[in-house]
Amino acid sequence: MRGADITQEALFITVHLESFVPKKHPLRAIRTLFNLALKRIDWLLDSAYCEYGRESIPPERLLRAQLLQVLYTIRSERQLMEQMNYNLLFRWFVGLSVDDIVWNHFTFSKNRDRLLEHEVISALFTEIVEMARKKNLVSDEHFSVDGTLIQAWASQKSFRPTKGDDDDETPGSGRNKERDFRVEKRTNDTHASTTDPDSRIYKKSRGSEAKMGYLGHTTMENRISLIVNAKASLATGTAERETALNMLAKLPGSTAC
Image 1 (cartoon, rainbow, N blue to C red):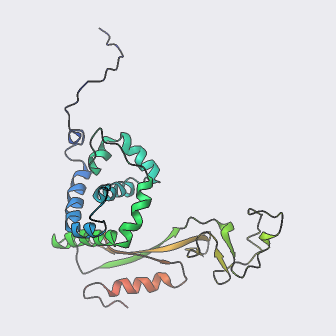
Image 2: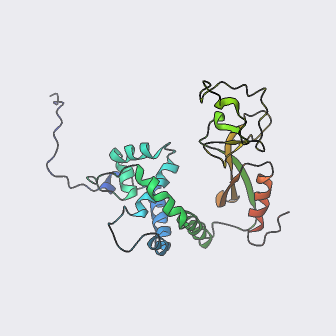
């Protein structure tokens, strides 16, 4: 007998979110370790918020959501909240129930500065590395430092002369006037972005395209490929090697040269 294609919602649901997550799903172990690191910096989270006033969204949930964004390479917080609305795995990992209302993506913008100001992210990173050290997962024998270009949210057309002699401001030219980048000589000494002044025009190799950006640096322990330190710097010609030596010099028993 053929079944009828009829969807009927149950009046009451007694199933738990955890039952939808496979027992061997990697997020189970990640969530346990991440929650342990969060408990160790609970005092720091308390100092970031006032003792009085309306209760905020728990910062632990915001940090778990941002970890999901990194793990699943979700391109924006708006898209993250969209998936959080219907993805049961994400809801379980963050700590939301089935009927909890997902917060607005602007919440991240409002709380990001607060967490950065109190150095919550760096403290959380340090706790995770320390947990790995206590379990003998990190050795002090062999490390590597690598750098990467982090592209800034600044267009090439925002890279204007700093002395104010740009002819783009002439009447009728418009903000999107065509530029001949092959003929015009532009350097970080004479130009700067009008939307992101700290970014620099930079390229990683001779054959690659020059882009507005910053440099990211990581120190990796080679035995299990765990990143034990990370920094960001201005994209200058010497920043990569200078930062690499500085990061290696801070390792235990280091004799970096």
